Length: 231
Length: 231
Image (cartoon, rainbow over all chains, first blue to last red; front, top):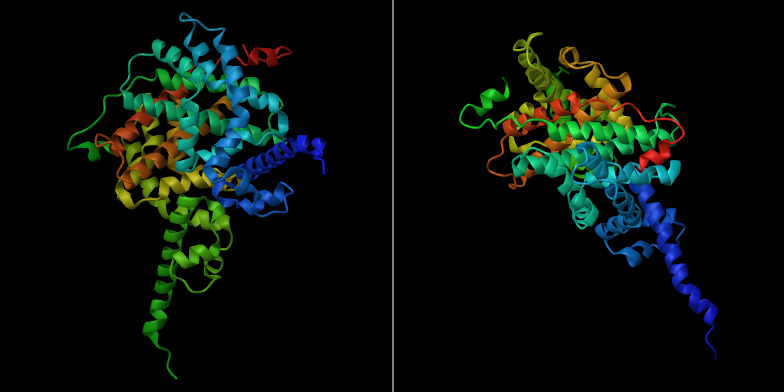
């Protein structure tokens, strides 16, 4: 018996195609319903797979599946940010450095077109603490994100580390959820005709710049804190 | 046969107690897993109800149940905002007017203590477009919220209506999700000891003021918009 080299050669391709179909279905279902509201069986069915265990076989647990979806977009987003970083220098305006942080996601979504579910997937996954931790760890591994953050921090007045971490989280929330909202409006045909991903990105950059430039009110502590909370 | 007037009198109380238990269970489960990931049967079981249809019987559909949870908090939140509004006047600083918008939620959560699920419930419900519409419509009906917004807008430079609506949504996102995060950290005992609801509120007010004061970059439109998106 001879081995059929043709079918040997296509096996990895078939496996890759199956993985792609699973990731497409999972991203869409997670975006629509939330990451915990969808079963592996539902993902397998939506991906046209008869075998109930196919999702677990290819991806293991929920965190691995979420990470695999992130990774499919990571190369494009990283490239967009690297391109933006070639156009900034230490003397660039704060807007431009913040643009390197904010613009890659909307620019990537603009390239995906009106069949994208990615922003809504990110918004849903971010609502689960364990999955948010997966997303954060993945972002921290991005060299371009670190360079953009360092460039931005050099132009900002010093703020306590805790406030810096909070504002980083606020910026991420605003970008992800506003992109999710616009992605949904585009797909449903209810986005105002004047809107483009470019205007959405420009408005996000404005708001995030404002958020980072806001002076920090000295923390109110001490015994009358509860009272002042109502002041 | 005589009617037992005692049991007649307690029947509405029993119904109210059942409704309360259902709302407690629903808020917690929605907060933990997402509003669409939880079935009426699971809510009924968590509320100690043997009858499978008890949630539907008391509340109808998912929107009505979400609205009933909101309403349980609405009186307290409205009162907190009305109190804050007695302390501001047209000459008050922007920070104080923004405080009237931002502080009622964290102040209410501070009163609820470390067994609160309300902020996480709001964050989860906001991720569903239909439920976000329910929450928005309910907020719009609040007279105190409208007064606080009008006071804030008087102190802000004019911005296009679309930008105003977007920044309102960004502010809401930041407040709800950061409160949800802090609520979770408190309950899990991982909040930094220096943190209080008061410091959380003060930092939210700072950030939201910054977001509203950010100058609006004129929208980039025209044929080269896609190009500029990468600039």
